[in-house]
Image: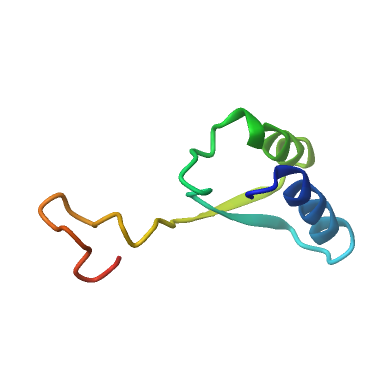
Length: 76
């Protein structure tokens, strides 16, 4: 996802050549939100194809799970 054009090409390859029925993406792209304009083409293509998108939660280890923690105790 750090290269949206390459991500779109990989999505097309997975669907057209490998027979995938959907895609999985992480919820964090180098700290950028998924609703950024640079990711729009991926979501547009997924909508056009009417495929599922599985969101896998992801964050950096510098984000604690709870505000009172400086570092996540369990890294959930």
